[in-house]
Length: 171
Ligand SMILES: [Zn+2]
Image 1 (cartoon, helix red, strand yellow):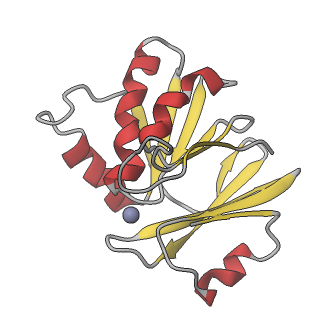
Image 2 (cartoon, rainbow, N blue to C red):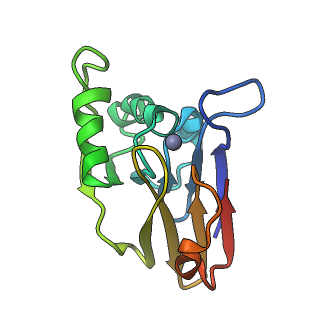
Image 3 (cartoon, protein in one colour):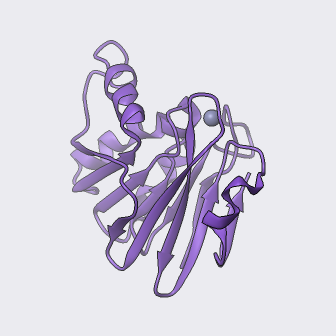
């Protein structure tokens, strides 16, 4: 399982780091769409993309707007955005309001249901403590597993969710 860290910072990008984005090219899965999303297109192995959002804070979702150009240019031919229903609603009403970003990319919005099958992979989620709500993701494949936990403080409350995982990416 290959992982590409497109961004590892929070709040705003700086000279050394962009905001949250972790790409798994073999699966076509992007975890969070921060400012590092502009780095995604040359790393795509397939034109089919699945974006899983932990929450709607701007540093995790602003990169969705960067996907418009590669979608118009057919570098990305399908893009499904997976997130909790209230996150998808916030994106549609706020980030993609006509006043802020007038062209809605041809995303398919998929409310999170656990687990989500993507090819041989299974993506499950667990709610975390964070203002506005957030989720952790766990990806299990026949070749290995990883979990992505961000924007929360370490807690034993989700240990069972992480148990046995090969790789943990934790803020
Ligand atoms: Zn946050």
